[in-house]
Length: 545
Image 1: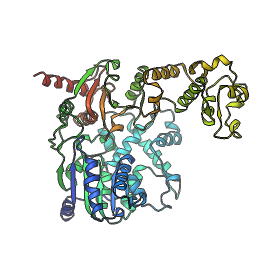
Image 2 (image 1 turned 180 degrees about the horizontal axis):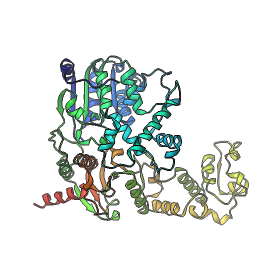
Image 3 (image 1 turned 90 degrees about the horizontal axis):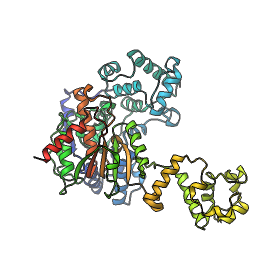
Image 4 (image 1 turned 90 degrees about the vertical axis):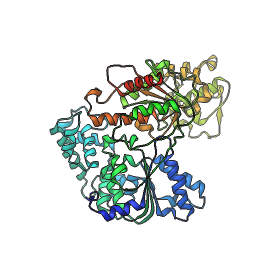
């Protein structure tokens, strides 16, 4: 596999420097906006064909946003014209020949890795594996760092497996990938490695790379290979938000190793004085940071600490909310507490806090109880949760096959010829008396709380509260942000190395800078010497001077 060029290749480095512009943008300064509005659109106006432009980011959302804005500004193009606007993995994948790589048959995603190891080696079958096996995560990290796996293993302060088990899992996993013969299996890291070795990337006019601080050395190898045939390169990122070190990412490649002229965005459009001041206190602990002096918006805002979730003013502060945990286990805690408080929320992938089919059934019965009619689809949803039917056959979708889609039913219709076995007086009972099948008492209580707090209409709209990890909402923003300070990983902050402490600061800096107006620090456990507590105390001291 090709490696990143040596520093001795002065001619190549000089060429890269002159054709590369590196855009440093602190939170809210508009890095992506600059790439789209000032770079992409400018080159399209000059007549550069979209097929000669590659726009690479790490999320489909960012890529889709770039395409949508370009299409709106230049309606003469269509989506197919922007075929090189992709995530890095998809960009590499498109150049594989079908017989070499067919994702439908060969792709191994993260969810399958643990199952593969567990099922392929009986000696590992009794291990208490997590969703993403620790050893395979470290193996992936080593590949992305272009480093020997045992060296990465030795440097980890937290070790889930012994070295023997670690190596056995790697061997088992690699053997499985080869078991497909000529059509061997492939994972995300293989996609990048094969692209470096096998793909002859086409010449392009423009390469635009967003969130460049999140690239691993392996991924930078692809960028270096592409760069030889590209006229102009634009890189945008913020090394203070480089929070993927656990996966091998190294912001130094963006800040230092990849040559280019620097442009720094100097004013955030997101937050005011309080959020800016608090985030800068956290940033003081990021010792390897590129210098970035930037201004905040002319507004105050505030930062406040709480010991109890119920103290946070969700009802009194208007706007959107992020409730953020450090790891998935703390996010699960937050979701349970939010349900007890009767909050309406989703995760960052728009998965709501309740089962949509249950909500549809509730709405259908509410219409029936108010004397209105429901259509065939609504009746099917409702029947899934009704116990009082003359025959179980009425719950089967085949019952409705011969019924026209436009037909509607009231309470009388459902009783007379649709199998509903309820007395007339039951029509006006509340939904929780009728829709009992597959509803747990906890779910019923939660829906009652939601309806009393929000009403029917708001529950049909998108939630204003998102509960997820800091990593999941990176790049997003909300009016108000809750940072949950419990659940350090590894469990004791004092055990972390100097670099791990810096990396933790970057995570919390990223979380704090999602806020447009206010930050709410929720700390329920003083067991850990966690960054939030110390940073907040410094903040209070500076505010009271």
